[in-house]
Length: 140
Image (cartoon, helix red, strand yellow):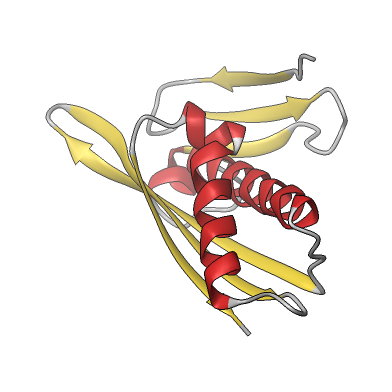
């Protein structure tokens, strides 16, 4: 299985701009720039897309793990924060932080904790990231 996205850029870093497009069409010439990445300009940025990917992947993995344990969530709401920090002359992604609020009928706190830790460790995006991954999970 392969998924495809492409980037286009014109100009220098500070004043240039670009667009991102995915084969599915979900992103179609979606703008990104220095301002949307390092300031608060309009458009998306790579870190925002990485956060969406990690939140989505973790949540789907948790759904599978719960299913295998005989549980079905009423809702799983995950927020991911990707941290981009100065690193020498450049920048590095230093952390991915997941925050989960889950409504899972009949889940014990122990089963919940075991499931979220397994999802954190085993979702494909977690395995891709070479950075610290932290998690706050709340069963409500």
